Image (cartoon, rainbow, N blue to C red; front, side, top):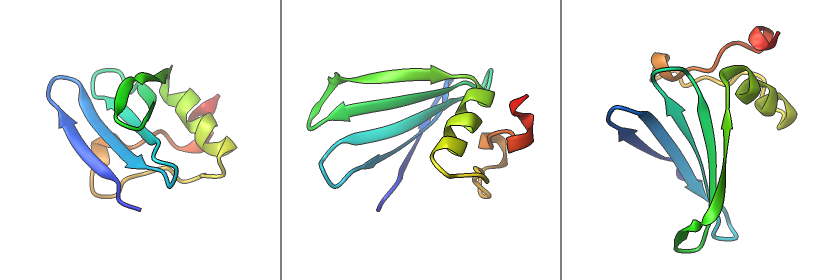
Length: 88
């Protein structure tokens, strides 16, 4: 599965992938406050999707629910989510 990384100047970074069903799923990581925005859209119509804004702690909690306990990007240290123990 290919994950696309797009810089969003003045905002942060967007990472997206396309599921086997053709759904686009992504996360926008905001540089200023660490907020994460989960985005979802259907085939060819980004306006037909939805989004969910999460604080860094909420993003870590969601990652835990998905079974991902070490959510980091070793190549981009500034884009890391807090460690799971930061959920408090």
